[in-house]
Length: 431
Ligand code: URA
Image (tube, rainbow, N blue to C red; front, side, top):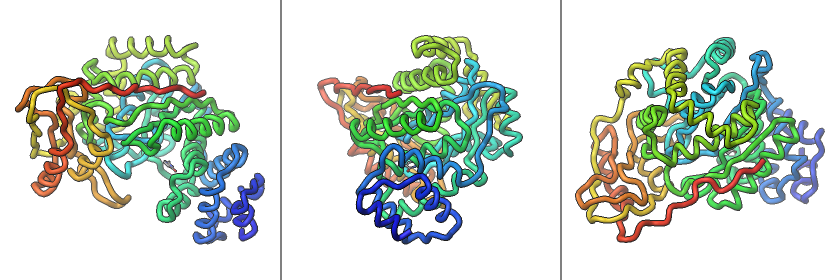
């Protein structure tokens, strides 16, 4: 291992055998954390070629269990978002895409940071089971074309160990390490087609379009090298997606969107990602037809009905979603506009921090999360507001979180005479 750290430190490429030796040895416990940390730092500074990154992805994917979904009898696709504030697209896309005949068998994470992940959001539906056995998971996909469960079992143990190490050694933000971490989980989960939503902006991991493009290009090329059709959509995360930020609040927004009453930006991003999922799933020949099919599935109620049967199949109380009886933090507080004019852009990172202060996110894996907490943007950038009208609504479970949130929120709201220039939502698609 010392020789291999030295080799990477000096900028040389590692062979397939060397990479498999390192990952295998680390998972077995033969290579200690301190050597792995030095190796990760060498990669941080020296980078990795595409061949090395694809090999690293493959070694990580093979480090534990791998799902074989080929018996499902259809082509299925997976989707991954690099994460953003108010990003509830998986919940919307699953039923939209499944109702167009492409199977969605998805493993998702709980969230660290500003707000929960998809699994936290689904946990806000009473009774919903985020953990199914593999047999139950596959049976459900076969029956209704859709299941979303928490990552479980021994899937990519190399990533679990390496990510925890990167987190405390300032090596998270290395493009080959991020790309192999994300793609190894998709490959091990059996994806045939992969659609990546790579976000850039203040509320995203990648702050600039250029960084996002570099990451997206590498992930698409890894997918190609490993025989999985991979498409990346670069989307803007300078302001939150949709109006709701927080777990239960976001599920309620998804229910609205599936019934044709969703915010425009959420719909636009979901149609783009969903259309590419239909392309990758072989259901349509091009993205335009894909968008049209998805619009029809929304208009006919097919996507909404699929969502309800998905909740019911996994033990969730779909009626509670229909009746909007999800647990939302009882104390709520409106932030009113001080003047009349156009609402200016809300910074996604700051709205995320506000949601976090209110209790909607977790700082460490063990932190508790308040599924009912969050923020709703009553007005989004570019909308007109009269002085005294609510712009933000805060939901928190204690006076302390609400008081802290109030202080943050008051500095966030800006109203101006000029309508702000709204950012382009979809920058480009890489395939
Ligand atoms: N998300 C992941 O899954 N892995 C990373 O390394 C970064 C973000």
